[in-house]
Length: 357
Picture 1 (tube, helix red, strand yellow):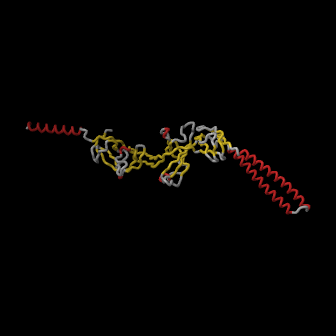
Picture 2: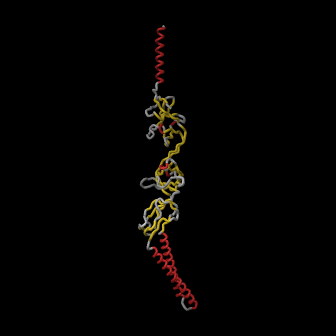
Picture 3: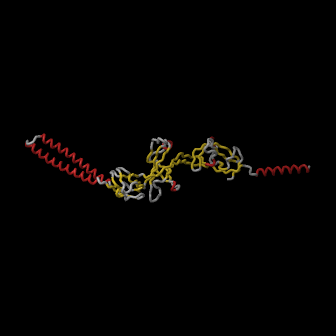
């Protein structure tokens, strides 16, 4: 009897040891997991443009002539009313003198007509002249009064053209470009230089109709200037077109950003990004790495519990900064569940796993 029991006992012990060794073997798929958290996710879309000054102007003379001085230089900061350039037009001086002479002549003729009209009226009271003569003198005086008005307007015009031969800064700013050099002839209205203000800049971007419908004048938007790092500034919508561009079908939107030149390096000419919130979602948040097939038609998540994974189809609500807001049908996924974020590419539903973290 003892001989029979000993072999059976040895077989049982060997079998038990084999089972223990199998259980301790790392045969399960190693995976890394994180906890599903509750949170809020803003999905922001980025639209690019170039910053330009809000106050900007292309300056020109209103009369033709030769630029004789141009003290303003590109990049120079100027104050309102500061001299930028002067124009020489040899016709303006003689034209002013001729207009002044014509005015003086018209004034002399008008004054003489007034005296003659007074004399005719005096004579008409004694019957020396008839009423017809008085009316004729009145008509002559009215014509001369009109001639004086025309002469005054001509003189004012020539004086204004002389003043226009001096180009002054219309506001405080910086000369952004110089187009004409001293000695060059310019036509009336030909651009001489560009000036832009420093205290306000704006950026024009093109947005799809779905986003434009959510905006209004005065709406706050976030603006980033990539050249200056990740710092964000606040801008306001100042222009909002309700008609899309013919070629793109997109809608122009202008965003203004106030600038303090003494404390920021934001300048016109820099690239800017306008960030517009596309989705604002509150709910279950997981890392983007937890989603299998995130851009396909069947995104899913592997939930890990008790050493086994369960495949759960999900619907993606928003994606932003490496995180995803999701929902699942039938509350199969809940806040506090652990989901696989690494090692899930070859997983199958119901597979045994070993969580490494």
